[in-house]
Amino acid sequence: MPEATSGQARPGGQTQRLVRKHPDELLVGLVSISDRAFAGQYADQGVPALRAWLQDTIVGPMQVVSCVLPDERAQIADTLRGLVDDTGCDLVLTTGGTGPAPRDVTPDATLDVATRELPGFAEQMRQVSLHFVPTAILSRQVAVLRECPDGHAALILNLPGQPRAIRETLEGVHANAQSAGVSGVFAAVPYCLDLIGGPYIETRPERVQAFRPKSARRQQ
Image (cartoon, rainbow, N blue to C red; front, side, top):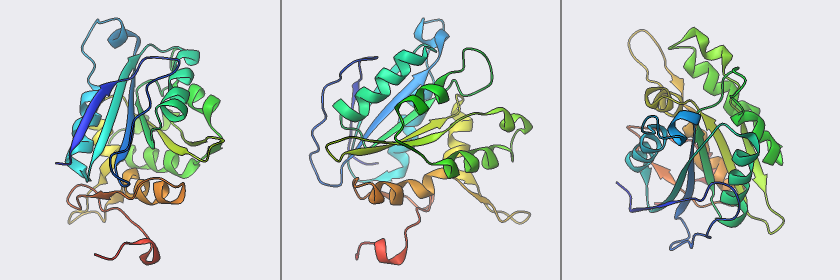
């Protein structure tokens, strides 16, 4: 597992800026969005699932900050802005609140803070999920960039709310005798971070085979 430090982000408003200890250290924000988890009616499962998956997949150092929020559009948007602009996260992963129900506002809040949308991620997330459940077509999850005036930029991805669905979306459908498999969305995340000026990260190939063009790969 990579070296990882964890902290709690304050919901909404400014958060303390992370200090990168190595040029390739990944700074990650994890946001679980659920009225009931926020109210303490059950223990949040989204953030622990995301943190464990990242620690099992990322090769190299990583700092993680996290929080649990209610399904409130303005509060979600303020928190996403803070994680990118103030905390300095390179990657922000949200979990929950992506369906068609009236309180599912995570995609709307994410688009509120976006400078550019990356629709290919969302298309692929639904394609992967359709291998498991037909209701994947109901998901409204999005992926966006947030670019700051100082040149810092981050990738924000909306993920499903259930730990199993999170893993499936990130890893994809593994190939077997009956199927060639479908790539999970995380395979494209390292190169995306390269392109927006983020750290160079690598993954464990048994979990995710990250793709980069040959010209973008570091010499070993």
